[in-house]
Length: 411
Image (cartoon, rainbow, N blue to C red; front, side, top):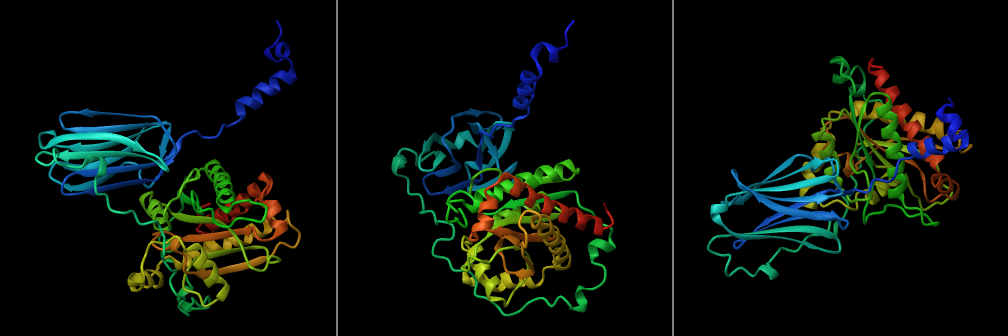
């Protein structure tokens, strides 16, 4: 009797196997934001979906719940299994979770005896789902179609980056010598949060040829996640698709996941189009004009105000992870330059620097920001367009992470 391979023929079998191995694009919309407002006449809950998706809604009793199921959707880690209190006597909280692999469920815990009515509807541009809940006594007069919702403040609109403060970590400082607390306690690395910079309406740098930084960053991050998982390390992305995640929320995800390392991936740009190479940053204040310029560009989406500067500076200067962040940055930078140098002869090592990057503030673990190459450099832009170079960039960062883990005596 002929084997399956003989009956099909090797060319046909190869085609079948290649199709089976192919991984189609994830069709699920990634949900990254849930908002709620309590007004005198009603409460509004808004789920930002971003893409048109089918949904269904209903109610459950004992205890009372209003639910909305969004189909072909997935939750960003920052929202997974989160509960939010509501300041209303007819609503106790709002919850959201990944009900199934392709369905997200929003649940509002309510006291139906205090509710006159509610409605679930959607709005476009961008697509979002809205739940309006009207308590007894005001529902009849509530202007349901023209409810007074406070204007939403665009993230980062009209904001200015923090002014530079001329203070930097001295890498020869004796306080940076000796074994860190992590090494003294024999701590290792189980979970790494990978942050693909930018996303959604914030594309980052756009090259002359139209290549957008957000797409490059995500491709490298996805490849890095695969390598880390293969090495037995849990890897979580702050975004898995083209969505906008707030700068401050990215380290929140890392803290929620109790990550051991946080790696933010970016693609660089410079006014001098001949400038190329890679550089890696850890959290610190810097007097370097080029670092200040880069930090201002990366921090443009921050929603913080100047009045918060004092507490922000305290967070930076009291960052107890500076030693391990520096060690991680040095390992990543060395391996990234070595790997990409095989693809681009003369690829420049721009070094490791401290910088006041918002995406690194607030993380409770060693954190670095990697600028893998320059989209403003024609040669590097051409390379960044290719899957091979992106894979190599991920490989360099991966090798750096693994070298850092081995330096802890854990690999």
